[in-house]
Amino acid sequence: MSAGTDPVRDGGIPAPEGDGGGRRVPGERAVGSTTAHDLAVRHRLLLALAALLTLSLFLSYEGVHGDADPLRTSSAPAVLSLDTALYALGQAEADAGAATPTSDFQKQISVAAQSVAAAAGDDAGGPSARQALQTVAALITVYEVKVQQAQQQPTGGVLREAYLSYATSILSDPGSGILPRLKVLQAQRRAAVHRQTSFGPLLWCGWAVTLLLALALVCCLLETQLFLRRRFRRRYNRGLLGAGALLLAGLAVTLLFTVWTHTGMTDTRRLLDRPLSGRELNHAGRATAAYLADTGLRAAAAGWILIGGILVMALAETGLRRHIDEYRFRPR
Image (cartoon, rainbow, N blue to C red; front, side, top):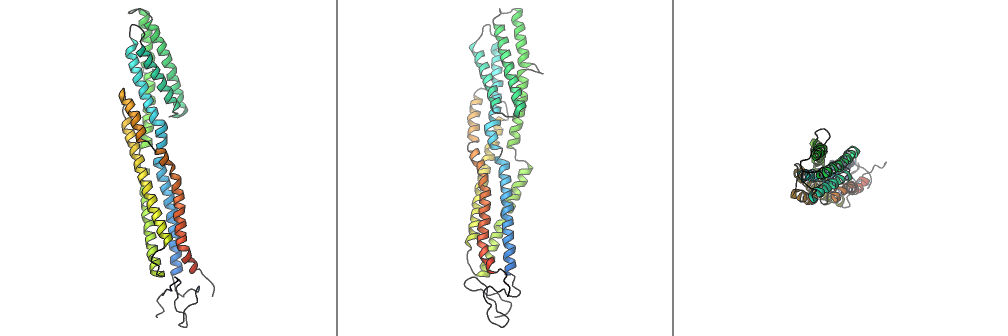
């Protein structure tokens, strides 16, 4: 047998010829053998790629799913509450000029007040938005009182017209009226919905890097498996096969969860991107609940990405450690 060959024993320990033509003692490294170096390089590369992929996948996944729960619990309900308040106040304004107090007016005012309170309770927009909504709620009360005072006056009376004019200014004054204030808050909430549902350049870049790292890790696992098969004559390495299977399964699940969540968020944005009224509000409430169902559960899966990454690294380590130990340097 020539000195340049690298024969292998059945147990997986290389047995090249020694200086005198006999076989080398197990554990003794052959002069010029690169197997130890090759194993070390692949070992470091696998662990580095797995760590980078875990971090990249976690950040990219969080970039999408981190906004899904706030959208479901805060932003989307706030938009619907403000649309309801605007619609109810519009209906109340139409009933404000009635000759006598009507139950419809009281009903619409009650709906508007409850909707404003619900929007403030959703805590969308922070303390400033909550304070603005509290101001609106107080103005709604003043508006209701002035309309009631007007309706108690004789039809066509000067005092009646004065009360109605004052009520209309409270409702619609461009600078400080209830409706302009609500429309400003509504525009802010819709802008928040757009931010939460957008898939911007940073997310595209993050997912592109993630997929490239996943491809690189899969290729590295396959190449390492083939390397071990050639060098050690072992058909399969269970550790590497387990790492590859876990990697592919985990990546498929996270991609599927991300597509489902982002689709629901996009559908929600399209639905809320225009003023809603009447029966549309009830339909929109049910539709957004359906679009964003289970987003909280899927968002919680982000923690499993870290656990899965650790398991992939552990399996890769297990698959290579035995062979690395066989080639560990020992002084002769």
